[in-house]
Length: 207
Image 1 (cartoon, helix red, strand yellow):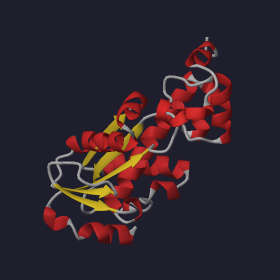
Image 2: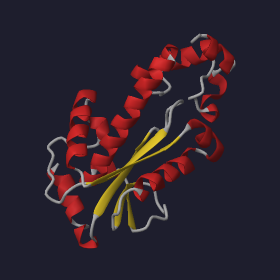
Image 3: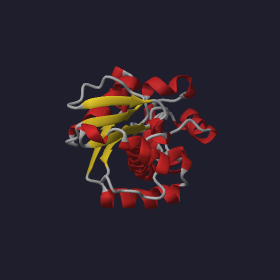
């Protein structure tokens, strides 16, 4: 955590500094979700780190701490139909712009993605969620937000196991796709040969 804080301190002369990260580029279903977060300069939450390094219970707890203490939080999301239309990279960029538009920052530390056209200085950082405190905070907010949404989708389409796989292409998920076909939250450009039945089968299974 100290190393992440030290990295962000280098950019404070630019003014208000936000971190931006995404989650959900790889799954077969669900939105790509982004977060843009500005933490107070004095913030030093112990467990803020790359969200992938934290257990689900830890992420949920740290998420609540971030939301209680952050100066600004913006959330962006792009759904499956738009992902299919414009591709996942452009969907991620669009979701990042949505999130950033909600935050009046002077500079944006962005995990890997470049040239978003934001109203402020952009600094793209490879493996930013393991380097920057602000990006790590954004990674946790984005991950918890998306995971909660996938659990809600699991209640609508329980046959796919979204609460467990979060839309990723696990063996369980792929087997369900082959058996039931896709549901409305699947990315058609991602599922390809995994589907053998039409979306009507998935709909009928919920009746």
